[in-house]
Structures are given as C-alpha cells and as structure tokens.
Length: 394
Image 1 (cartoon, helix red, strand yellow):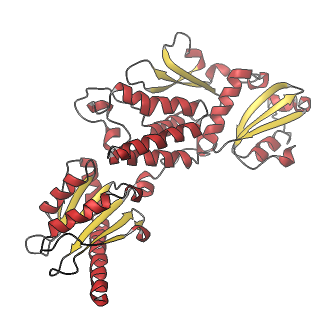
Image 2 (image 1 turned 135 degrees about the horizontal axis):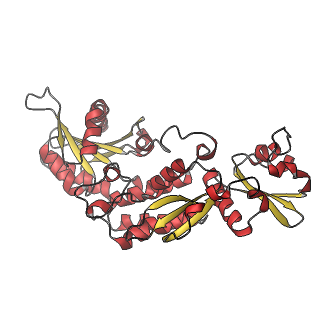
Image 3 (image 1 turned 180 degrees about the vertical axis):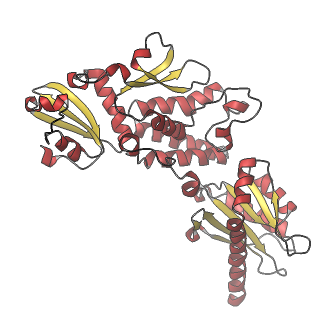
C-alpha cells in the first residue's frame, strides 16, 4: 500500500476493518505514511498499534493548507480515537469569525470555546502554526483587521490588503459577499467553488469599468491557484507568502513620437519588478490627429488601449510628459495611479509629477526611480523605432 502512495500533499486515513482509527495530513503522503513503520524507541501511540491497521486510504490535495482543512473536517466528523490518544486535544486550534457587521478572523483554543459567540467556527486544527495560517488567510481574502469610521486608512489598506472598512469604502453587504463568503467556502474545502465565484466577480468589475477591483480579484485568483504552503506545517514562515509586488505589479509606460504631421506614433511598454515584459509591448499608429498635439495623440492611444480588457489592468501608469499629460491619464485611467516624468525646465532634470496622493505608491516610486526612468526611456525608444520603421516603409 505504501509503495503505491503518491509523493503529493493530502490526507491519509488508517482503518481497522471499516473503523477510521487515525487521520493525518502530509506534504508527501508516501514519506509521511512510511515514517509510521520505521519503529523507534519513542513511538507515537498510533505506531504502538500499527499492526491493527489493515487498510490505508488517502485523498490528494493541491496544497498542505487544503490538507489541513480536510483533516479538520474528518476529525470533527468521525472523531478517530488515535487522533485523541496521547494528545492534548484541549489545546487544539479553532478559527472563528466574530459576530459584527465586518467580521474578523480569530483563533481560539478548544478549552476556551465554551460560551464563545461567533458567526462561524472552523476546526479543529491539531498541527498548524497558527500565526502563519492566519497571516495567509488574511492575505488571500482581504479579511479586515480594522474598524469602520476610523480617522485614517489602516496600514493594510495602504498596501492593498484591506478593502477599505476603515474609511467606509465598502459596506457590510459587499464585505460579506467579497470576503466572508469566499473565506467560509475555502475553509469548508471548496477552493474550486471560490475561484469560480471570483472569476464571475472579476468579469462583473471589468464590465462596470472598475478596473482596480477587477485587477485585485484577478491576482486573488492567481494566488489561490498557486498556493505553495508546506511552510505552514513543516518549517517557519521565513518570508511573506508571496513576493506580492514582484509577482503582481504591472507598470505600463507611454510615449508619443510626434515629428511633423506624418508618422505620429504612440508606444506602450510593460514591466514588473523583474524587468520589461516585451511580449506585451504595443505600438499605435495615430489615426485621428492631423496636427501637432501630443495630448490629442495620447488621448487616442489611451482610448484604444482601454478597449482591450484582455491586456490586463495596470497598477501604475507612467507617461513621458508633464502635468497636462498626467491630468489626461488621471481622467482616463480611473482608480489607477498615474504619474509622469518630465524633462524639467532646462530639459536636463527629470521631474516626477504625481497624479495622486497615495503615499505608499509615491514612496515606492521614489525608492525605485531608476526602474521608472529606465521604463520611460524604453517607451521613448520603442516609439522612435516604430516611427523610423514606418518612415522606411514609405
């Protein structure tokens, strides 16, 4: 039986005849189950009676966190006796949602459960690192840690990990729909259902032109599909669950090359923190502007770009230009941070012109100026090269 077990995460179930004696989770089902048969001096209770076991079943999961959730469901439903023998089950961890308009996610030990008034209780989770699991669930589902009607946005809101409970940007009905229901669904073991519902949300936001929210849901789906979380059970949580900015941040840079009345062109270049994503570059031959006007050319480029939802949604838009260009970008890229880099009055000094007051984003740009200067130069290079190619064709 052990020989046929997969080297994948999941839960394993030990049976004596048809009685479930023990359920456990594993990063590798094969390695974990094999370990029970490598007898040592300090044997676990289940190892002492290992000869009673005459059947082993297993269920593969996509990740260890899903194995933890499934293990909890089996323990709660079947109460296998060897999950209790030799263990202090009173110290097992449960998660619960508080009873309030914007429920919070908290952890509690079993001996404190009596009298708890909660919206929903999940568990028990016998072997988890509670802080890391909580951190992951907050990260995946934007669970609020703040309270409504605060005087200023919470830190999580500033780093896009809160939907705005603190500043009344989301009401309790939408919070229930976007945060609580997906979280409950996930902790009940239905990740596929969560992703399916999130995909519907993303399409609805895109249709309503709520591109920032569509983008947020897009990356929420991406995170759920890419869960790699053995660290929750087997080793310390050394770094953030996802290198969020490096994996997710989409920056689009724009420039217009406008020499004479012919061959007006625009460019769109794309980057994340790993560098340019050249396969997503776009070039535009200006079709509707017949005079010298960078602003009008830029407006045409933005209008054409915004028709292509399939290109994704930028987190930051960079324009090679000054205040007029930035104001146009703000007007057209609603709810997306726009800024420009101008050459300055003497055309020797790069001037950063911000189209918003989001301190966290501004600090990020200020700390990565070389990245954005390179992207500005890349947009300029791409536009000029396209213009030269068109001139050669003529």
